[in-house]
Length: 361
Image (cartoon, rainbow, N blue to C red):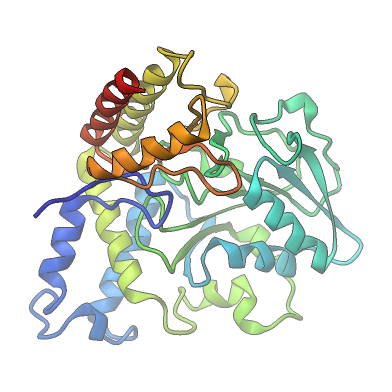
């Protein structure tokens, strides 16, 4: 078997031991005589997997009983609409911190449903190169909530501090850096993440909601779009994505075995340091457009002297078994997504290839 170095932005790399475990379980799951894909979501076999996934997430993050943990369909993008549907009440306004494409999409959905505004926007001509400072946030002390996107896959920026928002509930879309390091859940009223970057396959969103905030949700919207519906039914109101939840359970078990989020953070910082070191070490050829204190540990973006060289770089990298390095169509350049499951060896191979490419450019 030949596996490539996977730098895709999502769906993204999964730990090889997790994939091998799924391969073993695919036809018959734990002596049950059938695949987990065939099990009823109401049966005890799947129920154990479902409960283990939630318990592991609570353990790894340190989520208290003050919060609900939900596994929902529709990915993070559905949350862009579902959040204002539930929590943007008449007469209130919501604040959005714009730091990239996905936060802009979240705001666009909110504007369809109620009063909402950009409380920060660091873009220049549609390009984001930094995270706003605390003193740049123009917050409404009476806002229904403040929404932020912690990491920005397209432009390679990331929040490295928790914004102070007073008593207003803080909601974070952590889709592309969820569980990359320990974080204090108690600072947030809600966090959510599409699973396909760091913790599982596509088709699933993990949502963590503080119970007192959850209780403020509207009751006059479709039942399936109410967060309290899913909380009351332990994410089993309708048939969930059982296989994706099984995969999340396995990824979380793998992370725990590695030493938990502190160990995951250490490895992620080592990978990012290696790659940024290579870029900064030859700044006349490689150029990272992101301000240093806003650089992402998950999505490293950089440019070459010309688009022709960038195209050649991607083609030659692919021939050398490195995939997913072409930058997003709206940003161009090169992007390496080095999420939790991307091994250090892959980043080292990329850096070695960069050095070889530089000599021939």
